[in-house]
Amino acid sequence: MVAAPEVTFPELPSGPSVRVRGTFRKNRRRLFGRRMAEFTRYAIYSADVGCLVIMTAIGSKLAVDDEVAASVDVIARQLDIGSGETAAEGGTAQ
Image 1 (cartoon, rainbow, N blue to C red):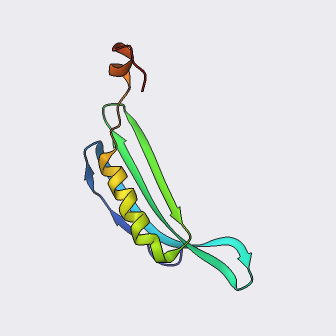
Image 2: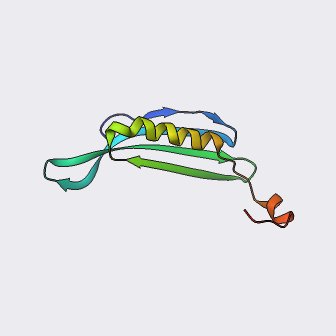
Image 3: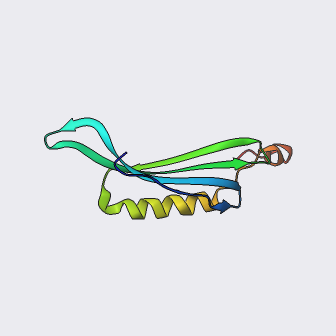
């Protein structure tokens, strides 16, 4: 890690969650040292299903990392975590 990650605890429709965003150095060496990358990771707990869902996005172009993080935030807010039992009972698969 290059610096301390940003940690927040957003309340999402799917359940309580933790959002971690940070910058790290990749292990591979290039001509001018190790390249940097940024990640945004969500850990979302769904009480309905009783499981933890992990979602991670990694971007290596620091110029567009805010756009990538904003896209991940939209996906996390719209994520609907369910057991799938309703779809199976109705005869349709999702």
